[in-house]
Length: 208
Image 1 (cartoon, rainbow, N blue to C red):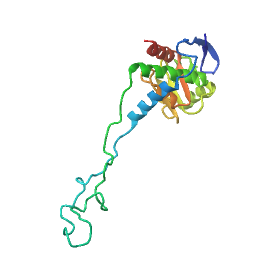
Image 2 (image 1 turned 30 degrees about the vertical axis):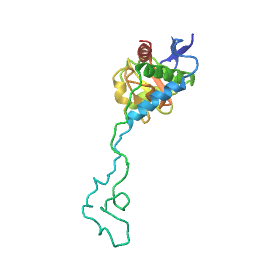
Image 3 (image 1 turned 90 degrees about the vertical axis):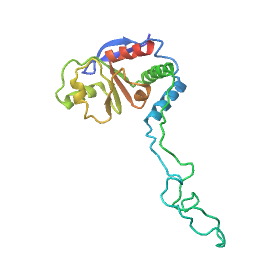
Image 4 (image 1 turned 60 degrees about the vertical axis):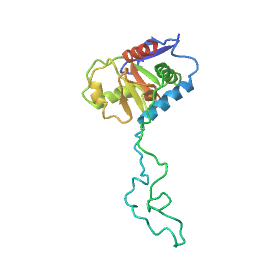
């Protein structure tokens, strides 16, 4: 059975976690991840693009010129789509792009995202930090000891609440609760930093 080392705040190994064979190991199912990522990205779209049709453009109530005798094409309104300043044909309108996929697929995508991070060696497990942090630079020293680099997603369940405060000013560092994280959150970050408590909760979410 595969294991994941658990590091303390000095970056030294303080234990190991046995990884469930049903979650870690084997081929990463890219098709499942694709379905989930597209769904989560669609929910982030604002959908505020809007254009005016000919009925929405002001003016155009008067016929521009007489029907016959001018040699020009017939025109009933200066707000016709073929005229400059006229309405737009089949233009975008505000809409909601959100949609859902089955719960089993979302759960499978969460499992595959964890497996992908483990296989790429971008998952770092930290022992719970019970002590209180007063300064951001104190927490930065912990990250340096853990060799955490790049855009990082942190699941710090079980740590002192001061960690949330001191990590707030760190660039490219995001803290999310383990019960709220999804596959898209994990994949869009380079490194996944999690505690033993967070790991257990994620496994429970996947296996239930």
